[in-house]
Structure formats: C-alpha cells, structure tokens
Image (cartoon, rainbow, N blue to C red; front, side):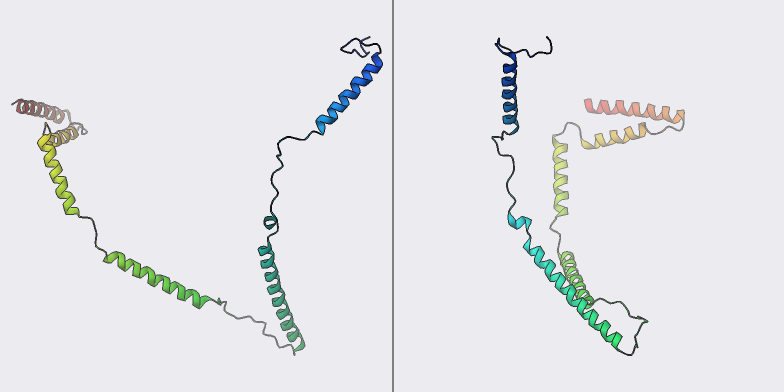
Length: 196
C-alpha cells in the first residue's frame, strides 16, 4: 500500500490522477526552466570600434610593410655578395654607433643650458622673508607676555634648569645631599620673594 500513489484529494481512479499530476508537474518544470528574467542582465553590446581597432591594424600593416622592404633590401645585398667573386669582409670591426646620437647630444646640451639658466634665476632672486621683522615681532610678543603674566619668564627658565640638574645622574651621595639642601633653600627664598 505504501508504494501506491496517494493523491491529495479523493479520486475515483488513482492511476489516472497520478498521470495527470505527473504531466502537470512536468509542464510546470518546463515552464520554470524556460522562463526568462524580467530584468535584462545581459549587458550592453560592445561597440564595433572597440572590438575592431583600425588604428592598430593600420600600424601593424605599416610595420609589416617596412619589415618586408628591409627583407627585400637584405636579400638583394646577399644576392650581390653571392654573385661576386667571394671577397667578403667578414671581420666586422665596426664601432656601434647610434644614428641619432648627435641630435640627442644637442638636446641634452639645450636642456642643460635651460637648467643652468633656471638655476641662475633662482640664485639671483632675493628672499621675500624678512627675518629681522619676525625677530622684532617675537621680542615684542615676549615682552607683552612678561607684562601680562603672573610670573616672569626668567623665573620659569631657572626652574627648568634646576630640574635638569636635580634629575641628573648622581655620582656620590654627598653631592646629591648638598644639591638637595641648596635647592630647598633656593625654593624657600623664591617663595619668600613671590609673597612680597
């Protein structure tokens, strides 16, 4: 009984219902497999001028024509050598030189002259910074700071120097004790001066 087809609804003929359900299911699967998407995600066609690069083809043809012409010239030279009496200079004691070496040296000289002229113009230029004015302005600023501050600048500079001496590496305990005694007496004197 477990192998027989069990329809969802009560039917008179199970065999016919099984065939109908199977055909419905197969048609549904065919429709699903052949369904097209509603959004076209195939992408745009690449233009012909991008796939077929005429300029590149033209350059290749020119290059091939130059190669063919050079091959023909070489073949004619070889034919002349073979037809001659066989006196061939086979030592090849030639110095390799470039065909555009003079032009490159002229360009290098012109560039170096231009660089030298630019360098001379840079050296001849006077500085636009006025250092003396900046220093005077800085001194005025410090004078104003001293005028409006509660403690003068010289006092804080001395304290910084004493702190550096205080934390210097100690060589002997006597020096450290004497410096600590003097620094404490200096602190008392400074404190007394500030109160008065």
